[in-house]
Length: 150
Image 1 (cartoon, rainbow, N blue to C red):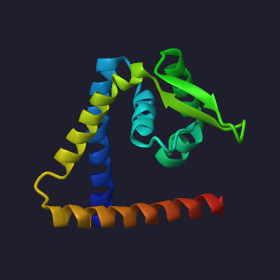
Image 2: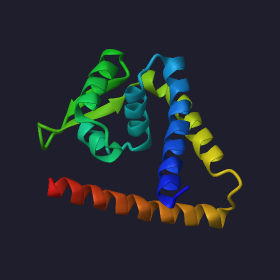
Image 3: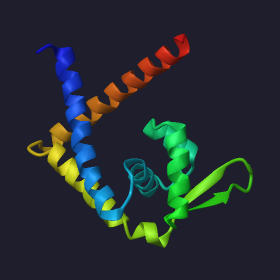
């Protein structure tokens, strides 16, 4: 197989593995994949607590995030609060009911990284992380170039 195919296949396998773990959380807690993504993002990034942050950093469609946030509010898993300085900015907060789900989110993340990095010693893990960061930055720059040329 070509290097191009191998890279794409590798990325797809990682995403499919993550989706399979996420599906378990969805089924056990009656949530959609987007709702799990939103809860996990807010749990893991308490300083980035707006729908815009989720759209920007998770690269999820704005409409999906908006709908997911509304559903999570209706389910009593999120609350929203208007920013004091900028009334257009809405902060999202996990409720106690959502915090009951966070152990499942933590377990999902633990299982993901544990399996993904199995057999790699600490120097290899650090090297992988550094390379992944650079590759992700290159991909983001490529996306920005693509968006700017359209």
